[in-house]
Length: 280
Image 1 (cartoon, rainbow, N blue to C red):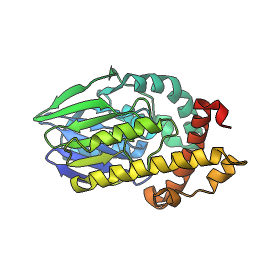
Image 2: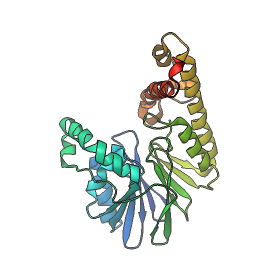
Image 3: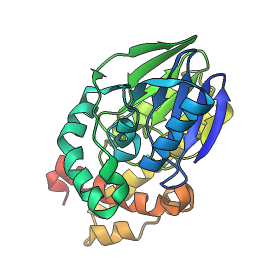
Image 4: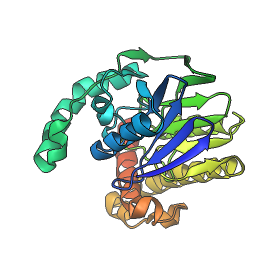
């Protein structure tokens, strides 16, 4: 697991076992807040660092959305109150138990894991939390998923986006237009850093270009789908369109970019057909 102190009392953690997924810690004088959890063994390592190195307990865990790599580690922070979108709570309750049963069959690590959904939720506007001298502002940022939220450390202008921002946008359970609308807002927030749900930390001077790159990619895959729909074998056409043809490198996220891209194209194809049934 990688770790970096990115500002006073603000820490970044990144998985070395799965897709460069990231998490954060905001440390106060008496307790800490965790933003997202990692894979099971790394959640435990993150808790050990907080308790032994920072000498703090974790009072709150914020889930940016319901996906396993960001929320299934909640149970490794006993006594902490979980915060998230109301839809995050709903989806964890409805979807996670059956998914966990499947995961337990493949990996014994998951046998020690229990699903803990958020106890404090919100749906619109913002939710605020004070951690020592830091003020956290939570806000909905849909696009990757309907329950997505981001967490702004106001004093440092550091934004933990969860998967609302990634090196390659992933919209299989999301909405392309919502994703674009969400990331466009990041440019005018006066941010120092974006902490992506996966991948490297984005610095202030990179933010505008990274936003443009992601929007360009999303528009490219929409164009590819619109073109493929008019062809005789649309899914075969989509499978022939590589990630680099849409402006992203195939080496992103340790080589996962090509698979994420393929899944984006297929998901967007069926979403487009659902919205325009006469397009076939």
